[in-house]
Image 1 (cartoon, one colour):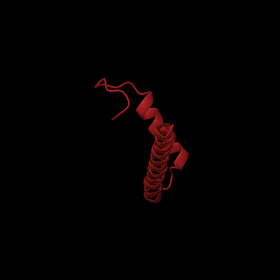
Image 2 (cartoon, rainbow, N blue to C red):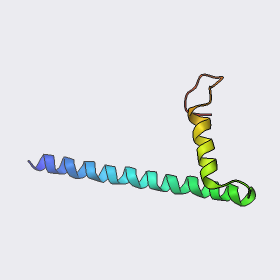
Image 3 (cartoon, helix red, strand yellow):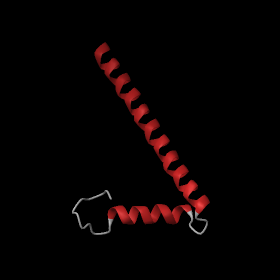
Length: 69
């Protein structure tokens, strides 16, 4: 029984760490976008996010790789 409890605690701990990582990642991305906006005032944040998503997901790739530049 104690092994199960230890395992559950470990899983919760790992999930918490993974979620923290994603949160910091999002903040980093938004920070980069804000810095870009400071130099290019005509763009807005959602527009950049949308364009990035579209570029990554939907534009046909010459190289054949899916999901990266």
